[in-house]
Image (cartoon, rainbow, N blue to C red; front, side):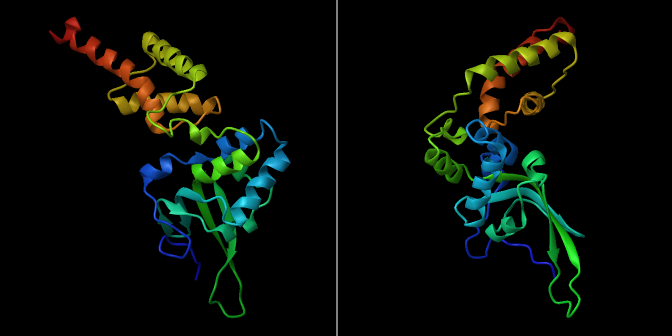
Length: 218
């Protein structure tokens, strides 16, 4: 039987989707490390902490055959099966080939895939501190999030341009947030949901006011 780590096992904790949203995506973490380390050293440093349980990891969902699930923490020993050339460092998804237990002499393999893997911000912050770097998780940790100036104006300019050109038709705030997240991801940035929301909220309010005062509604 294929064993998937559950939240009630020693060392693992139950997470909610909201909590995981504040964790750091794998690709973002690697890119951050590569500002001071070469790619091989960056991944090696991550694996060292992951396998020893010094850096917690979790996935937005997982699948193994017919079995599927939502948010789940990943057991440290799983990372001993991962190497520096694995696709996860570029995609954020982690497929593992595991032996099936309880099959007698036969040892067939099954695939267990974790989707949308993220790292615990506190553990990653400790890693960054050891390297003399500032962790992206530190942003907004002591109060309301303060978006980095470089993308705050850029994403608003992008969204405003799409609205003007008629290429974006948000029906709710979530639509505007998604458009912002998609554009930011294309730039290699993965800020927290609350951070993006605080940036696009004023734009959404202006959109609502314009629609409310539009002659078409009178």
